[in-house]
Length: 126
Image (cartoon, rainbow, N blue to C red; front, side, top):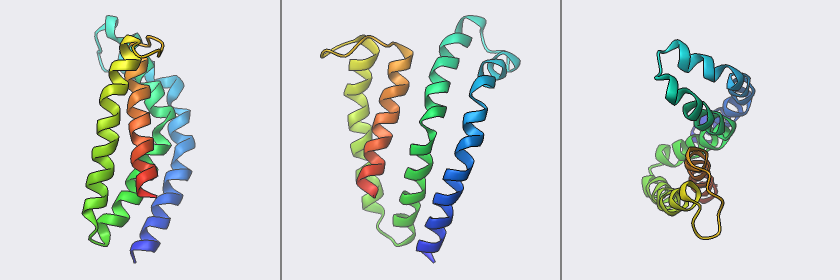
């Protein structure tokens, strides 16, 4: 049943991704409606838009991770998430502050590094 469930999770991930993308133009207004500090609306919107654009990676990573959890291979999930987290740390430093030849991206760099860490996690689980 794990293969069937994982396949359904993959389909659901792919089908829900356009809906997530449809909310990207609205995210700024959601922060405003939630009462976010006005000085934080622009950076929070920028960060959220990048994460939402890359959310397909997180959705698929979760689907594949659930497969391994379902068959009792939890170490695969743990090690792949650990690798993604370890990659995220130096990438955050490099992309936020513009180190090691990377451009200084600030909050957008933090979001990009998070997506890159998730990509590594997904690759290791596939």
